[in-house]
Every structure is written in C-alpha cells, then in structure tokens.
Image (tube, rainbow, N blue to C red; front, top):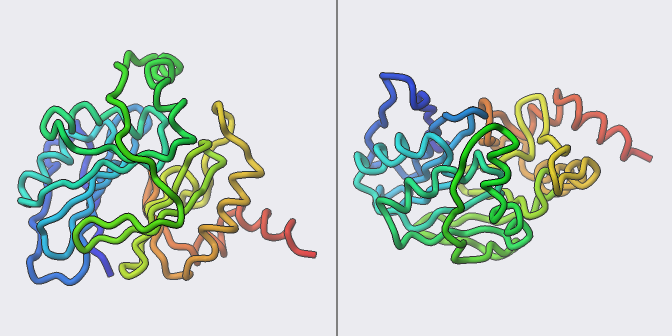
Length: 243
C-alpha cells in the first residue's frame, strides 16, 4: 500500500517531512494540516521520487513546500478537488516558489474560485484574489504526471465542480470534502446540495473497492468499507435507495 504520513500543522515545532524511499514501487503521499479549518494539503510523489503533484494547497502550504524541497522531486501541477478557500489559500505560496506551475480545476467551480476573497470574509479572513486556473479537469480523462495516473471522478454536492482523484493501483482516493470518517461534506454553502452529494458518494465512492483508502480534506483517513459499514449518513442513504 502507499505510504501515507500525516505531518503536524504550521504551529508545531516537530513538523518535518520524511525522505522518499528510492526503492519503493508505490507513491509517497503526505498530508499537511493547518489553518482555521484544519484542512489537509496533500503532496503526492511518484515511485521514482522524481515527479510530484500538489493537491489542495491550504494554509499548511509552507510545510508542504519544505517537504517537497527535501524530497528533491519536481512538482508538475497544482490539482484542486474544489475551490473552497481553505483548499486553495496556499496557492500563492506555491506559485511564489514555482511561478509557472499549472493550476487544474473543474470549470464548474470557477465561480467559487473567483470568489475566494468573499469566501474568506465569511470566516473573518482577508484573502487575495488567486491566479487564474490554467487547465480544466475533465472527469473520465486520466490525469498523468510521471508514473502517477489519477482517475478523475465527478463528485459534486459539497461544491458544484468537486472532483475525487483516485490512484487505482495504489488503492487510494483523495476525496476532498465529499466524505469523512463518520461524516460527509457540508452542503449549506453556496452551490451545495445534499441529494447531489449523496448521489455522488453512492455513484463514485461506494463503487470503489472496500479496501480503498479515502484521504479527505479534513480529519483522518478511512476506507470505503469502513464508511459503508459505519457512516450514519451513508447507511441512511443506502437504506433509502433500497426498494
């Protein structure tokens, strides 16, 4: 299985990144947690240790960049599961170091992305406008960087253009704010819809193997099987869908 390591947040003195094992045949995935929403930023480094992808860079982006620098890997893209402020507020930190790094976002979340300064005000934060996205994420089309090949699944409901990024061979899914350990994403923000979210979970998350490890935008990792068996929102939706 892929190595997933959770690093401490920006205020913790012991936050540091492990080295990438050159002999590994699976990607290294690291979580960096920080900010008012305790958002998980993700660094995914391919098995060779040479190629990397930054997913949802939030307030812990400086710690992520330090780990990237230590690894020696070259980042190929910033990929966003969705455009809520806590998942994108670190983009400027990343672009300050890698000014030409492309930003990938589903077009249905462009309005949210452009409204990040307004989103920040909802939570008492002053956030600057972000650089424009460079590429559109297209569900069903593989996203390939080095030996990393992500399957892009469209999972709206928490946000209109939310996607889930699956690494099938590694048995991992970066699920953003679709589903959490024992819970699901909130739907009370603009563009959210509870029925759409539960449809996304049933269609795109529960159809993955039960052993698939779910790496969320907040909180600890879980698995498809664990959430199918114990998540009260998922169990209620499955019960309702039965004839």
